[in-house]
Image (cartoon, rainbow, N blue to C red; front, side, top):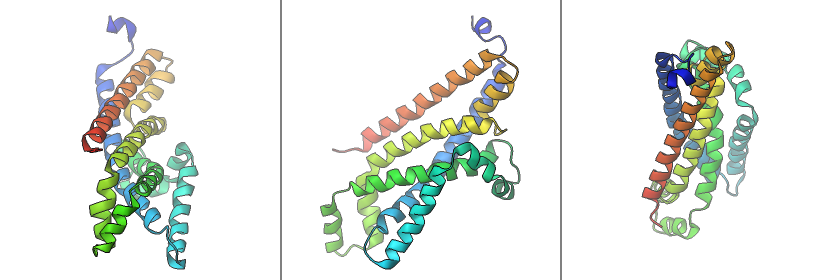
Length: 221
């Protein structure tokens, strides 16, 4: 039955492409989580009165806004020299990682900033009144209190990253997007495109389920 529906699909190619998509998504989600939280914290902590803070906030916000504004497919092309220098290649799943992380981290950083701003200011002021340093406020108050929102945000970002991996595949990054384009669309074998699409949808559901589960587990409200 499946062979009749997908006559041009090679299972080995599909398995390899799925592994590459999971690899690109998993590593880029981790990188985006780290870089996005750092940028989000900088946006939140520098959003204060004072010339130094406002200058820093302007610089960080400008960087975030610029990279958010660049379409992902163009960002990949712009980062080719940097990717080649960092990874030693511009093809394959590994080569897609810099563009995936740099493209998604600014988007997530804004989510982090919003999540931090929703933390009860009374809790923050109470921690400061007890003599807590900024680092303690960050690790003991801000991040724990905003964790459910941070997880929801990275879940949304992860799903966007899955779409990004499909676009990156169109220029040789590997994964299901590459398989769908190279062995599906270019050869006019749309059963391959359909098979890749179904698997991408399944991967999205997996990440959404994990994100929802973790968010509900951590949310104590």
